[in-house]
Image (tube, rainbow, N blue to C red):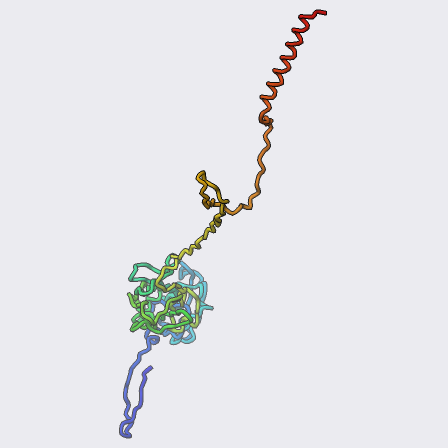
Length: 333
C-alpha cells in the first residue's frame, strides 16, 4: 500500500511522497505453475497456473497416477484469491492437477519451521543438553524451514518470518539493537542470522528467555497456528553469568564441647623438714556412666600373723606328745 501524506506550505497543498512501501505479501502471493503453496495460506493468485473461476483440481494421493481415480477434487471459486484451507488440504500434500487435462497446477506442502540458538562466543547450540547462556556472550539464530521456496515466486525475495523473544517478567523485544526481529527474510533451507544478540547489554536482564519463530505471510499463522508448522517450538534458555550446574556446598562447622576440668585442692601435707606446702591434683568431672562394681575374688585371703601362731601351737603339741611317750616308756603298765 502506498503511503501518501498531504502537507501544506504557505496555504498551498503539496503532495509529498514520503514513502513507497511495496508489501511483501502481494509479491509472495503470486504463484506460477508447478510451484509450492502451503496449508494455511490465503489470498493467493493462482491464475498463472491456468486456473479460472469454476476450474477443478484433482489429487491422486501419494504416488498416485493421473490415470487413476482422484482421491480428492476441489472446485476453484476465485483463482485470484485462493485459500489453501487446512480443512480441505490437510493430509493431501503433493501435486494437484487441473481437470480434465491433468496439467500440473501446483504442489501443496505442510509448512515446517525450526529455530535454534547459536552461542557464537562459546561455540555451542542451545538445546536439551545446554540450556545456559553465559551473560556477555553474543548469540544468534539458526532457522530451518521448507518455506524458503517462497523465494522462487516471482518478485519474492524469500519468506518473511517473525522472531519472538520473551524475557524475564514477560519482557518482549521488537529488535536486538539494530537487528529487527520482524520480516526476517529466509531464502535458503537453513538460515543463520550471525552474532546479532549481545547479551551483555543492560537491556537484557538475567533470567529465563524463550525464543520462537512464526510465519504470518498470507495469513498462514492465523489460519494454521500449529507448533512446528506455521510456528516453531519454543527454545528456552537461562541467561546468567554463573553456570547453574555449579552449586555452592555449604558446610556446617561441628563444635566439640570439651569436658570442663576442675582443680581440686589437696589437703596440706608435711615434708620431712616440717615445711607445709599446698598441692593440688586435676580431677575430671564425674561421668554419668554407670560404675561397674569390682568382681569379688574367690581366692581366700590369709589373715596376717596366722602362720606363726599355727607353727607355735604345733610345736607345743609336739612337745606334749614327746613328754608323754617318755613317761610311758619309763613306767610300763
